[in-house]
Length: 42
Image: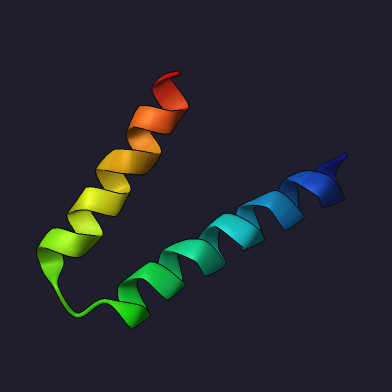
């Protein structure tokens, strides 16, 4: 169970790193972060 949680956090970290690395535009990053927050609220 703990390993599954750690793997989940690692995947999320990788996704966030990819968003930051592949986009040099701050607005683009903010839109994706807001998108993740909206998905979490549903």
